[in-house]
Image (cartoon, rainbow, N blue to C red; front, side, top):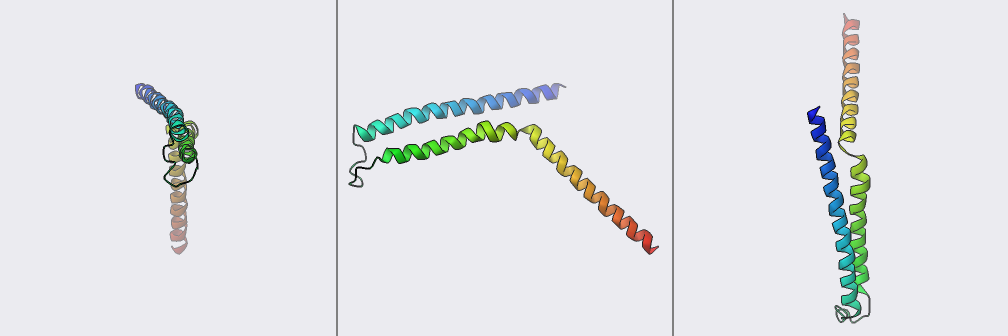
Length: 117
């Protein structure tokens, strides 16, 4: 019983840490995007690199947003449904499937040896 409580506590602590890192990533994304936009728009940082007036910060922010979305999916979708219980269920299912196959093979072997005798 104590082991289960400890596992639940560790799982809750790990989930809380994942969410905390995600929130930090979101705040960093907002501040970083604002900084990049201001640096591009008002200070002209990187404008003379290509001799074009493209908003390079939009590309950087878009890529960063994509990475943030992947992080969000990992924390709230993937890790939420594929936790320790899911892993245990999958392992139990695969072990049961293997045992079923082994028993089928054993019964087939026993049936073949009885037919030969």
